[in-house]
Length: 309
Length: 252
Picture (cartoon, each protein chain N blue to C red):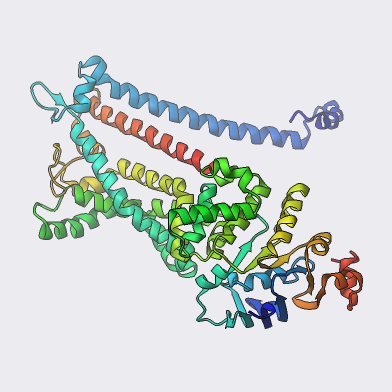
């Protein structure tokens, strides 16, 4: 670096026309890190640029209106004329991921309370590895399990074919359980010990301490976990596509087929040619996913700021 | 109640294999301040924490012996620790106000011990804040966050909070060691005031503080209770040489 001390030391070395070893190392290390960061930044911006340029094409060169895309109820890419209303997919994505979060949040929260407050030993040796295992299972396996277990079950118990919003939400809720649990466990572990002791010393029971002190104090961190879970559910394609039925309309019940932004992309992309309107319309859906990701990142940032306060 | 607020009999505390407190028997007089002194790691804080069973929260901790408070041996496994902790307040070195309003901090424990009526609760909160000399400083912002208070104010709030559950005994673990001299003086004044109504046990590293505020002093060393006597005697004419050495700063 440019510390005066190192300049003094490097002076005689310069006479020998050799760069001192520690400075060379410094330079190499910095170059290496800068290079990696540069590659990353270029990659991120090219991806965003690529998605945006393709995703905006239907609006710019094909005359599809933004409001048609956002609020249109019909998706007929092969029709005459072709219609691109993505509202059913938006609805499908939001309903499945929010419902998945509603199911996973209490489960994950209780799991992390169990691991940190109630039985840390059993939690650490059994529950935590189990939940980490859930995170490692590939999504196609989840979809397969959903298709072979959840869908037949729903078909037998409820009206309908089994495939649909509820099946998708159930599969997603298991998939996001690790995210929710891990983030809330970290939050619970970071709780200052004094708060818990302070409450217990006042004669509050464990449940009173958890519900009145621990959870309210950690609420922003816990919500962060839920939002990250929703973000993951929102972006999941394969497992959802396998169980949701993929009907491009807004479902009237939890047991009716639907489709999500991601599932329609994976289903249709093989049948389109690059540069065609249909293909570009799929990119528009991808752009919506990207924008939603920005929103999720923003929400998480806001929550983190509240945690620090 | 007798002259003694409570006493321990052969109280030992283990952390796993390590014995942190060795067979300590002590009597704590009613409405007096007892200071526990000794070098770090001598077991005084551990001893203090076993008086309201806070060591229960540490999985490896184990208690042997007896602590008698008002006719109950609280080391009995059947003890209702919730009731016990209502009778014994505790304050820590680091003020640990809840992330709630000032009012809610004080009202928190009281709600669980029968004071639910809103008027009663408000009166109790005011009374506790007055006792800790906080009322005039915070009465205009009772419903603002307690975290905005200064360190000394937070510590007095924590004392007020424990008074609100109407204990008869207060345990204090270095309550002023993280505070500036002015706040420390306020806490000491407060202790002198509180001993009219409460029996107080205070752990301190500050010899002058022990000499100033306590009626009796106990010197702990390596888990043993070395000497326990009137503060005046302990600081002027202790019986044991190690007590003298510690108090005069020759070790520890």
